[in-house]
Image (tube, rainbow, N blue to C red; front, top):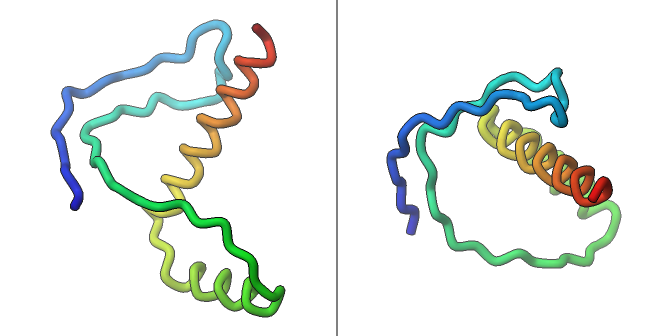
Length: 83
């Protein structure tokens, strides 16, 4: 079950230690989702087929979520490496 919680707009500004090329991103709401992460094993042909299907149905929002997650992970790892 998804639970959508309206949030006050949070504005972030790049600090001197962050990447100055990143634009401002505002969090306007959040949704809590329960999910199970699976580690899958399959043939290469099956993997290619699933990737093809995923690309056919993925929305712009899916790509945005993937990009934000990857960016946050990169930032955290970079920050951890400098401390």
